[in-house]
Length: 383
Image 1 (tube, rainbow, N blue to C red):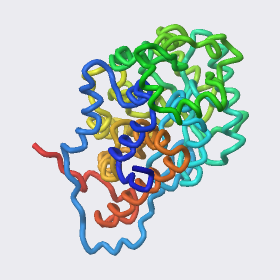
Image 2 (cartoon, helix red, strand yellow):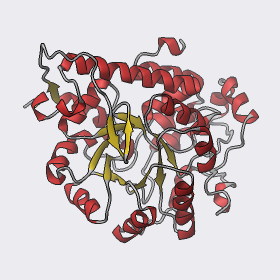
Image 3 (tube, helix red, strand yellow):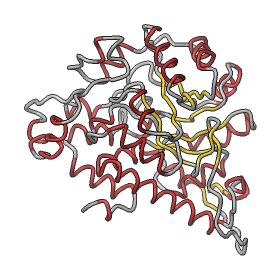
């Protein structure tokens, strides 16, 4: 199996599983506790059906939309995901170049293995930075200021990771960052010699954007869970979020909003967008799926916020359903990480082409010329 055989999520997942050591594959694939929310994130799209109109003379539909002040060519973009160096040796650079080619957002995590400046130098495409509030405020300030200087278009603050979720798969596989060879994991790494060669012959693993602010960025012989619990501020509150919004002074989203109350409060502190997200089912198991909440939040906030659905997207029809329910755009993490693992930049490009083709084809089948025509009349929920 190779990239040309990858047509959907499961294909990319299967190829990634063949190429990644088991602990790293399961770090992408898993969720928290019993993984019920992880599963629900995608299953929720099956609770409703699309209603097409015929003979609409669609021609070539316009798939563009505007988020974070930038027009993008398709209504889906790459979610911020940490440590992409683990999945492919080109990491964030591969993702950023692929996103630029398709005219959509690349998003950088605070815990990226390339610097803000490195990615800004190799990509002129739209870029979003994902911020975590650290206990040391100077780290937070430094990240915001460097993104501004480097020309990032927007920023999002992740608000659902005050502590790390209980990711039991990682306990079982012994996942750490950087990877350590243990009796438990040795066989898995030995069976993936190409990954091992690329990992040890390319750039050293590091948390590039914080390495000069804390020794935790260079000396990590522990799990990502420990890093989160040690470095992020568990006492983060609305005042901290408002401080970040004002310091950035540009398009800004809270990532991890799930309630109507929090969506309204995001408006009050100056946010221009929210990302409805449960962190890919990796934090609070048993929480609602993002798709479950889109319609109610849109009805509550009107056009005062851009709404990005983040989580569970596997198909172009999922994107259409999200937009019909009230989302401005969608983002995805797990699927593009499997594509990155399967084939680096060409893998991500293959995935984005597949998604573009699916969305385009399904817009024609729906009888919609523009994304704005995807409204509540195009969606019926099953009883």
